[in-house]
Image 1 (tube, one colour):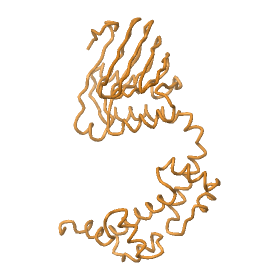
Image 2 (image 1 turned 180 degrees about the vertical axis):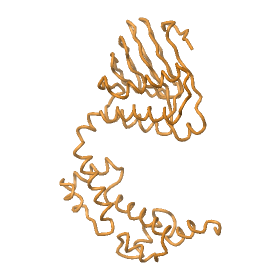
Image 3 (image 1 turned 120 degrees about the vertical axis):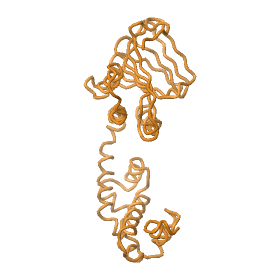
Image 4 (image 1 turned 135 degrees about the horizontal axis):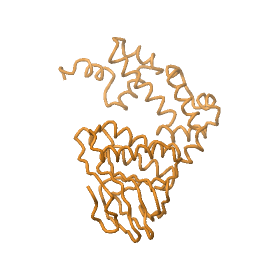
Length: 287
C-alpha cells in the first residue's frame, strides 16, 4: 500500500499484518512494516500507537522525542521507540527509513533492558550488523508477498534486539563480570550438593565477595544464596518426579543438612511439601 500522508512521498509503501493467536501468545510479531521517504517539514506527534517501533535511517536526519528524551537520528543509526508512550518525529530537510512496528510478550522487557543499558533509544551499530539486514528482510518479505513465517520473523526481530543489546557500552564494560558469574553458575551446578559459601564462590570467580554479590544479582536477578537454593529445589523436583528415593535421601542428595530444613525450604518455594508435590506429579487424577 502507498501512503497518502502529508510530507510522505508517493513511492513510499507500507504493509499491515494481523498476527495469529499463537504469535500474540509466544512470539515477537510484526504489526506493520514499510519504507518511507519524507520531505522537509514532516512532523508527527502521537499520544500512543500501541506498539514498539524499530527503524533505520537511510538518508537525512530526524529529531525524535520519547520518554522525555530527545535525540537526532542520522544515516546508519537504528531507533527503538516505545510507541505506547507519547512520541514525536520532526525533520526540517527530509529523511528516509525502513521501519517496523512490532509487539510481543517480551517486547517491553527488551525495551527496558536496552534503554537502561544505553540510556537512549538511538543506537549506532556497525553497517554490517545483522540488525539492518533483518529489518530490510522483514520489509522485503511483505513487499514481495512471500508466505509469512511468524516464527522466522520473530527470530529476526529477536536477533535485531539482541544485536542492539550486545553492543551496549555497559554490557561490553561488564564482560569480565559476566564471565565471572557464568563461571560461578557452572560451579554451582556441579557442586550444589556440597556446602557452598559466598567466599567459596567469590574465590572461584577471583573477585571480592562484595563485588561478586553485586554482579551476580545484576546478571541473574538473584543473590548467590537464592540461586543455590533454587538450584537445589530444581534438582529435588526432578528426583521427586523420576525416582522412588525417600524425601530424606533426596534432601541429602541435593545439599540440605537435614530433612526438615529441606522440607521447609521446598514448601516456601512451591507451596507444597515434597511428598505432596511428588503425589500431585505422579498421580494427578487422584487430586
